[in-house]
Length: 200
Image (cartoon, rainbow, N blue to C red; front, side):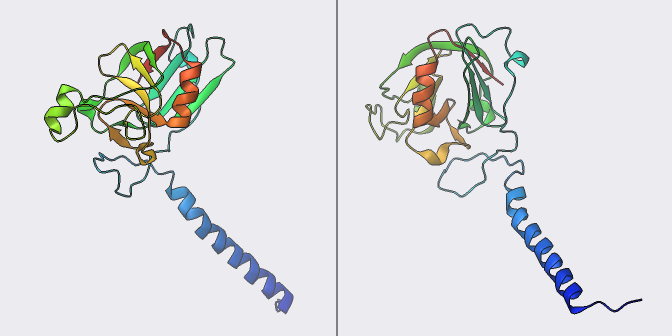
């Protein structure tokens, strides 16, 4: 049996060190893809976002057609998918979702009104839970609905923007689906009154 030469020892040491370094670098990347869920009422807390299921999906699994366009909101992956009517445009956006299951609504609805400059009033149930909240907030940087809103056929339910970017990817809404302002502005231009919406 031959004795390892210094060059062979150095090569083995290099490979072992590189392998250990690669494993340690990969650990945080793997950790961020773990499935995490939380009921979050204070978005200042540091929590993980759920991105384990954030992936493209086929429209055919959820809609019979794409007439007027189609929006799929996946509560589990906290993602909103949009397909244009002719299916030449597909978008995938991270979203905020309701804080708890009792605030979450699922099923089929549609866009009934596009609001280019939304103002905000708390719903009666919001006001009961948070009596200290103001009765009205006009359009602007303090508005919880951000820069655009798509009203759904369900009363009080909207897909809207938010100025508080910490909310995206989290359980942080009172029932609505929130997007970054730049994303709702793009979706606002792509969607139309009558666009199909499915929340799953």
